[in-house]
Length: 377
Ligand code: ATP
Figure 1: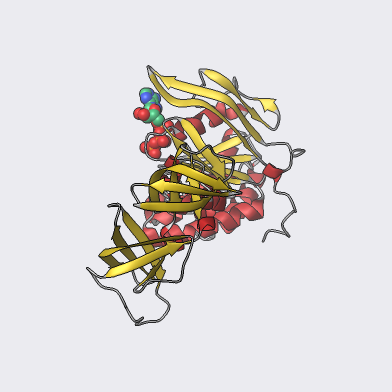
Figure 2 (figure 1 turned 45 degrees about the horizontal axis):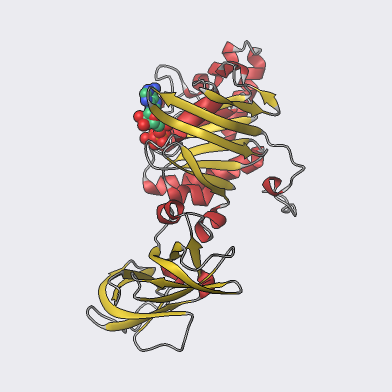
């Protein structure tokens, strides 16, 4: 288990040295900018995720880090050394590929030992290290099997063992859990995080699955069209997205476009035609009246009532258009005066909660100014 948390995380500490520095890296394929002027610092011991939709450039960025692609511009430093011109095998990095790429004709133990044999490590040491790895990924007794005699989850663990056996400083994982079904995936997420914490190796993972990135990462970078749109801890990204793209990409969100009418201290009043109302939201900075912006609020921050609630910072009324019962939560869609749909999420605490609302009913929603975010970008 991890020890007590330091007061400052490495990325908040100006004196901490990053393990990986990506400086203004651009990689094009023909006319296409797969990675467009990306800079990023990743610190020792982090579990860092590159998150984005298919084609946003995350795998290309990982391949640049591994040395499989040469950037057109910019540089990559690992441990303070410029590795931009170095081939993959000269970098203190290992990569675990999407397909795992296990050798089908080799046993599990030989798959794990492969890289060590290439490096001409003495046989006795290879045997010890392979045995250690099999223990680590809980596959003792499986060393003699062939990959096709394993389940998907077990193959994934062999690939991980093979990537870790050379004790890289940095492990790059390209959609490591992509081939697993949902249940095994969730289980393996925890295993992978535990393993990473135990070993203290820095992991950089590519994924398009936001829940996976949120569950596993110390920090994540959200990418779109070759660019990084925000870097932060999962809660920073979720609670304080700093642009509309990130707000819409991670989780569900209610978004109201509008213009600032007034600012009192740190509270903005925003007129929104979408909402058909004036909304109040906390401002991060001073904003000139008239400035267009979006007010965004997550559905779980929106409370819903069958009767007019006590006054609150933001109160709207409308008609219930949809109700989805998901077991743990229910989701309500309310059509409000401005024409927008507002989503409110209610946790179902009691088994058979009094469901006070049904389709077509009038309902009221409200949320605090503190629970919404104002986005200029
Ligand atoms: P996915 O999740 O689908 O793997 P990704 O975010 O990892 O997507 P990349 O594989 O990095 O995306 O690709 C980024 C863009 O660069 C895509 O438009 C892709 O078609 C293009 N691209 C990637 N590799 C090459 C290549 N070798 N030649 C030409 N275009 C490429």
